[in-house]
Length: 37
Image (tube, rainbow, N blue to C red):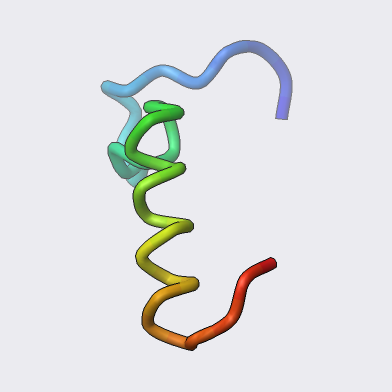
């Protein structure tokens, strides 16, 4: 994929364009599976 992601593009989720939300999602995923990556 070339160029920056545009949040207005169809199919993009907030965690795909917001580093803080991506980090929170990753941390929650680790909690749910009981492992750290």
